[in-house]
Image (cartoon, rainbow, N blue to C red; front, side, top):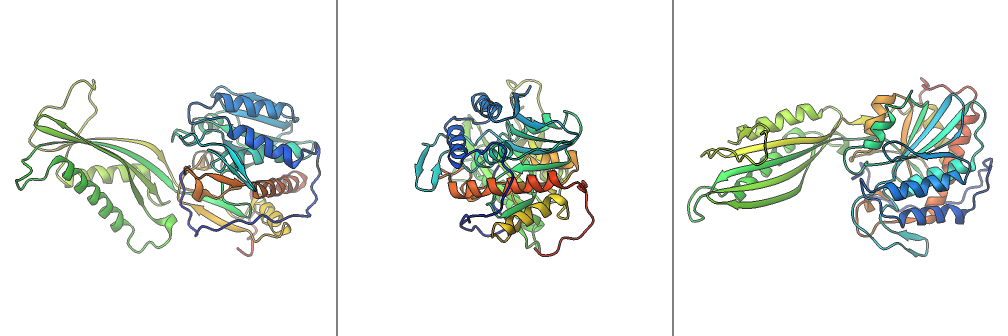
Length: 414
């Protein structure tokens, strides 16, 4: 999950808590840290998660879970067998790039410590320690392919029976913050093909025309964003990749563009607008050809082949639910001042939130500014603090006999 938060970055200081939570297995702090360190030590980029999934399933099976690897590779562990269900959905895949796993004081370094094995292991450790009362079941899932923009694991889950009563998404935001929403996404591959011109002449070279197109995309987004002050309401473009090649009398440019979408802009509408922009800029749009070995017919007009993928609609969860109130109370009792966050990236919340229509938040330890970076690391004291918060939240939810999936009472404060 890529993120730039709609709040300035902060440093997190974990606080000790005196909040007592029933403990069924007495998992030690060192055991929780060992789980995280072991899982981070297993590389698991998207589509290569099997070893990490097996590791997590083995750990859950020895800590009171009914655990398995499901049909698409998700690590799934459940405690309890009641009709009311709490789903803690993390992801076990990571952004590519091996990083050395090492400890330095309170810090654990390594790929996935923050995004998002830290939150996932916090889920597993917390559920291992709580008493699950009759009538409830609590499930932890380490989903596959969240980082691949396919969300294969999450999409499989929404086909597997009824929606849970409550869902927590495992993503980093800090132990005292609650994430309520994520922006939408659209990925765009553009292949431009244009005739060459002499570099001493007046006509633009193909590579220069590609830069012109990118500048036009930025200008379109700037116009869209006029008078939109909040990051969650803005359309954010990114130039992820650009390569130019010579093909005789023609030149090509392959561009990978990414867009983060606000709630009032759908991927379909943006795709249509981008296609119109290309035509306005003088590019002839081409349809998909039956064979990739058939080059387009020569034409003096620059041509563009466009492919869209990774489409997700922005999602914002309701704030006034028993789940949110449980988090607010637990964070406050631990000495924190809970804050709400809207993220400018995407997560599996974008997939399961609209499908399940249940109370949902994202929560987890870690500073998301370190996602995908060479310096990815997590504070172990914050990781342990988040486990204490999760235990308290689960205790509140499962012991609340008046629990309802929705609440109409306005939550004061924040």
